[in-house]
Figure 1: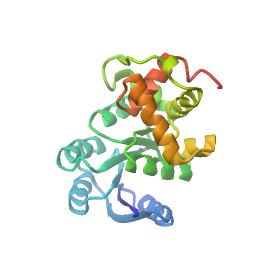
Figure 2: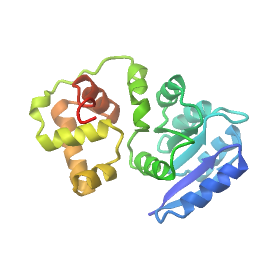
Figure 3: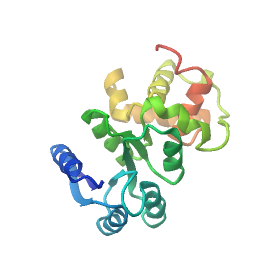
Figure 4: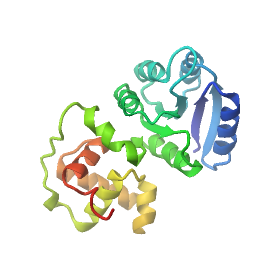
Length: 216
């Protein structure tokens, strides 16, 4: 089944380009567009897309305001913020109000496709270069992981490192020559052993234990 996408951006040329790019993907379908924040909210509540690709700066409601209101009325919709701003405070605020991802407009096409797959699958997507900022304030607390790194197998450590670097399950599977299902199984085992509940906590744990400094 195709991932249903709503594009919200006040630049018509950009919307047209995104529609063409995404509709060319065999498992994606653009089901609507919006040119301002108020229309984005109305269209999202009416069309109920799987993913709302949302510019953060638009006339009317901002992307942050749309996300906040939408997550109260339609929490199942994954909001992927699309912006020119590599701003850590905006990133933290977007995730705090419920955005599932934050991608920069200068990103290559393949990164946008990967980001949409990631958030549609229930993951949090943030460009690896901005991950550290997300972890600083998103939860307001340090990781409380109760498990030990010693409980992980060598393969699980590899998977954890790749997750922390911002890779999707599909990218990890390709990198390690595994199936996506196997990667998902490893991830589930890692979270169980370390008593972690989200991708953010996994990344935080990896940073605290120096996994992002290895093989770089």
